[in-house]
Amino acid sequence: MQLDVLYFAWVRERIGLAKEQVTTDAQTVADLVKELSVREERYQAAFQDMTVVKVAIDQTMVSLDAPLKGAREVAFFPPMTGG
Image 1: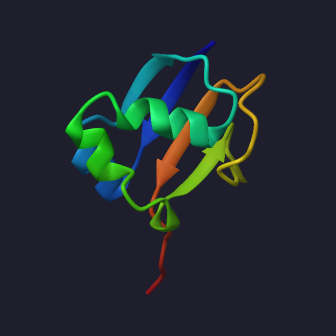
Image 2: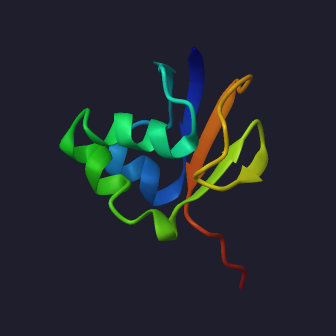
């Protein structure tokens, strides 16, 4: 399947991209993170601690075990804080 993968804030800074199209066989978000992490060191650095990264599928917050079936977009971002 093809997905648009979006990266925000420091996740984007570590990976060096705001968006990319990914062809994947991943079944869940966790599978996608594993696939991306083995690509290059910059992905591994961004995803090394998934307890501080939030995920959304098609603009809906999800957990790492969420299925990707039917998804068009996956976004990774740090938790937001207000001020």
